[in-house]
Length: 70
Image 1 (cartoon, helix red, strand yellow):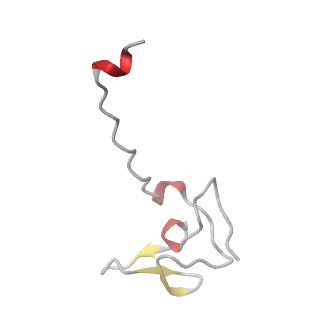
Image 2: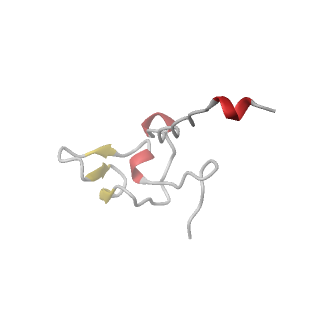
Image 3: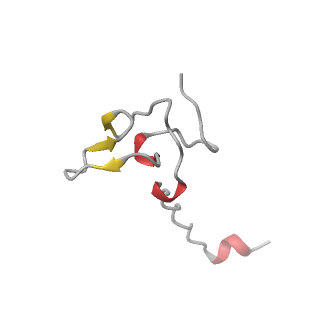
């Protein structure tokens, strides 16, 4: 079962306040569950918004003078 946090953000150990990134940056070290994969989560999941890096905004479209003609 998948649940959503806010909008379309899915829970992941990467965003959990309990988890810490391992030295090789491939796994999450969790004091509750041990070594976990980045995209996994458990029932102890607690969202930490400061750990999530938002996606970049799409580039703005280039306008031409024809776009502003009536």
